[in-house]
Length: 157
Image 1 (cartoon, rainbow, N blue to C red):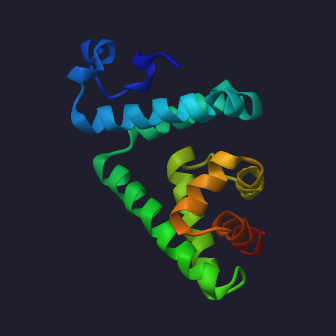
Image 2: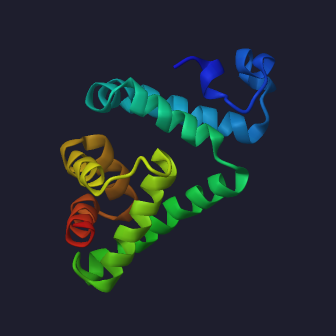
């Protein structure tokens, strides 16, 4: 994706030189670019260019309030995952975790792009990808990714 497409809320001058972009836009752009480097090729093969481009545009178009909410939610998911590791993947706490994760995915993909089937497919991918396992297990404890996926499967179907 071209930088000018990614910085949808910025001027052409800012799109050409990201150092001139407002700090929130630069932070979002950096995150989108990091995700693109890490997961982009695979995501584009799996979901198609349009889906990935739309998700990237969605992230870049979040208001400051939505962005901050998304970041807080990301941290809260990890905290809740730690609780669910103790309580179990079919506990009320796990239902809360699944709802939180669903909201996070909706914020990332955009309203109307979410489906339970796609979410559960993504969750299955978490277990097959060392990058996702590292992300969750390093933050919430060994086995956290398996617990998250079990909680999603138990509570989203």
